[in-house]
Image (cartoon, rainbow, N blue to C red):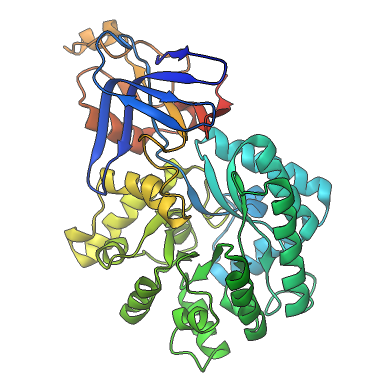
Length: 460
């Protein structure tokens, strides 16, 4: 197992094998390396190919291939896996709005948010763009819990003054803006420089907001420079609804653009059914896209054409979209991104398929760029912050492999005391080990998680 050598109380050297995405198509694998992290959680040196270091590594520390989660509804966590046979609009009314409205109860909100954050951290998510509810107090509580737990988070109060149940919507555009300002002010009071917690302006999606509210949110973004998040073209019925509600706009993307919301700091979730002109507009405005493959499949919304988006120059990251998505694991999002691309390829040709390297990039550097943190997280480089997870892979005992004519290399592995679902026989290349983790791994492989140098999760 990689060792840590304390130089002082707050400075640490991590020793082991480190893997991160160098480019969209290339993994950088650093065997027998050492990374120094200072008291501020920043990487100050990276040494490669050190001799006689980590001769019995069971867990391979690499840059967290599941951060950040660029789209997750913390308020929906109790419903993860519950969607029945519904599609998006039915699902909202049947499952989502009733649950979210119940989080006006601050004690219930505390239980839900605490568990959600604990679970995402245990799955290696160091950074998350969270949707909360319309309630100011419970949204502020989510920010408090994230700060206490040490998870980097973007926390958004949902704005919706239209087409939502009477029991769960904003009274007016004015009250929605006032309540959103209250959450921004609260986050500023607990983390003045937004070092860990950042407010994020959150119009739920265009149909749930009147034009005056969308305009006011665009003005709020302009005056505060706070980032934004919303949904776009997730479901065909939703796209048709937008056409009816905003007949003066030529497209869903233009609705956001004309209201001052399509900017480089906007995260658009889904983007399954956008047109070529919408894609070009999104690229021109440098807005970002959160691809949510598990949710898109679970709610039968469709298969996003990620290769088409990437080839156009749009920045894409991954989101779990709990609870439309059934799992809070970003590794599952990585896995499903690979599989969904293969389904798209069955219609569009093999060029649509995403490689292991590419889906890991979407879950790391791509996601970091989506949330505007590409200069802070996403890789093991000097000046970057130490956001990492320690991955444990199980070496099959030598006696078992001998029965199958196999041989083991003991130079890099030993048996893990916390056996996960990924079996390593010793002859696999590093690329093959990573692929086995992507397709077979889960939270049992995540032994430790750090955010900005702070240990925030350790598997017992």
